[in-house]
Length: 143
Image (cartoon, rainbow, N blue to C red; front, top):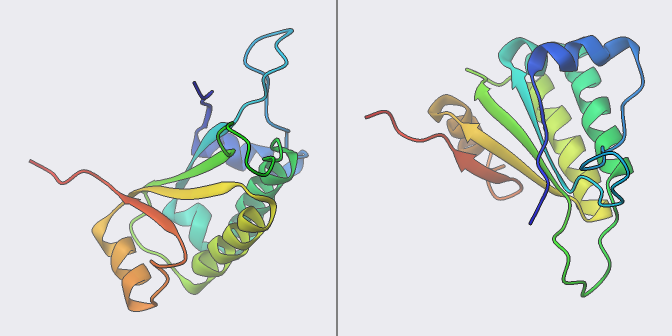
């Protein structure tokens, strides 16, 4: 069973002045590291150069601190989910930072997943042919 965590966008912005925190433990005294983290972000966070870089730095900090998967291990790979449900559009700044985070995650064996991806953002990935580079999970269609 995997552990889950979530960081809302306002807390990600608040972390701009402080260092990135490593993956947390399940409970006090537990030796099981957090193997799945979900981070929410907004359109402004992802498309502004300053905040996009800070978001990228925070995500890479989590990736660097995540437990490293062992070859042929039965344990699940650490997973970092980036919730794009509040992102309406994506600029070249945002695309570049996502590419950098994805590259770092792959290099160290962390699964980087873009979740709650809306139609307009998905279209950007399709037009740029980046949908093949990322693990993208669309948001549920409205009923």
